[in-house]
Length: 213
Image (tube, rainbow, N blue to C red; front, side, top):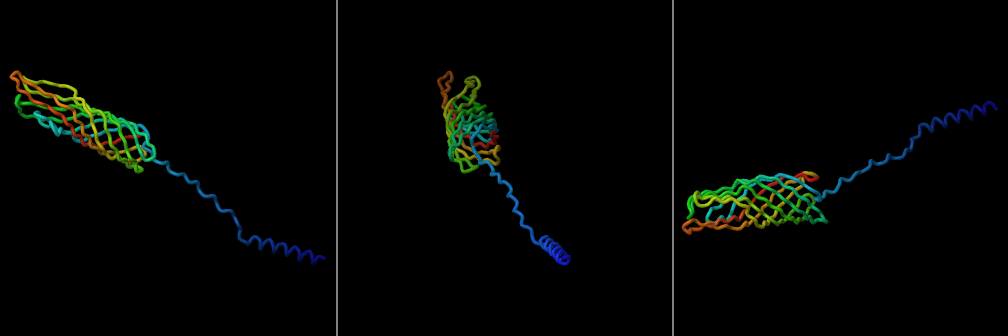
């Protein structure tokens, strides 16, 4: 009987040792959670700066002033599918100036500032936005002929244009655009009945950098 118990005990010890040597089967670790990056949208308010060149393509008898522009921008976009609608306004300081001589005498023609308020309609290709724009434009125009004309006034008109904007991050975008703003004309006459017409068909090529909220 003693031998039987001893043999049973030895068999149990051997079975335990063999079981310890067998490979263990553990469940695979759970995969790390995946967080999809947020889809970019053009919807939101933005502010920015812009700068470039402005020139009058048809200045009448007072030449075609041209020069640099720099200013600020504010706007809002709303995206519907791939279409983007929005509104944008900007103010630019303008250094456009032209001097010369016409029938009234030596003149100076200068545009000091430009303001636009426009609607925008665009087509978004992810972070790239192609758009057309149009609305109101106005400019401060100063025309001077010593002893004859000393005029400073605001000219009103329309504006149309197109551009491309790209979002480098969810908040930073850059754009390049062209705007055409025909701002009407004025006629000036001296004491002898001589008259000269001042026109202001303004062209602007600008680049801008915006921060989208």
